[in-house]
Amino acid sequence: MEAIRSRKEMIVISFFWAVLVIIAAMAMINGVKSLKNKRNPVPVQSAGNNTAVSPVNTGGTVQSDEQELIRYIGANPRDIDSIIRLGDIYYDRNEPAKGIEIFKKAEKIDPENLHVQTDLGMLYMRTQRPDEAIERFEKVLKIKPGFLNAHFYMGHIYRFDKNDKDKAVEHFEEVLNNNPNTTLKKAALQQIEEMRR
Image (cartoon, rainbow, N blue to C red; front, side):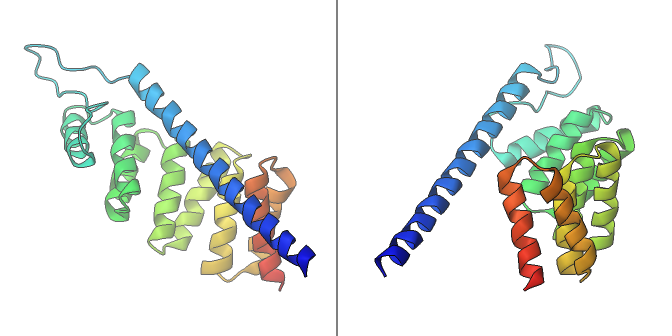
């Protein structure tokens, strides 16, 4: 009994550390994105100029950042980076209809943009539109064939929305066979094992 208890404790401890590492990695990624935005700001309005003020690093609330981006995009309708930032706000706030609308505008400017296609796929997943999500992830794989997250999401769609276990396993196995990322690999393996039970 003592061996089983210590095994369970090890599993709990391992899980705790895995979650902690994932949180730390996400914090580092967000920090790098923040630094990148600070180094590459959109031009700011100068005195006497009628162009909109750049929404980058306004330091305001998400609501004020959203309004600044909307104004800026109104004056600069082809600024793909600002359009994507606005789409990301809607994505993060779980406003899929607004996110889809703004990312479709970005797609018209740059249809090969990996960020735009991936977020459209995720937003279509959130709105229970599996066929449109699959279409986006297939575009992602044409843009970047080795992008295994797209296979992982397609595996989920085929498993849960399309009830096509064979196609789901095909996508999850693509992740297993080609992914050095152990977290994603473990998640794909778990999906396959659950389907085989």
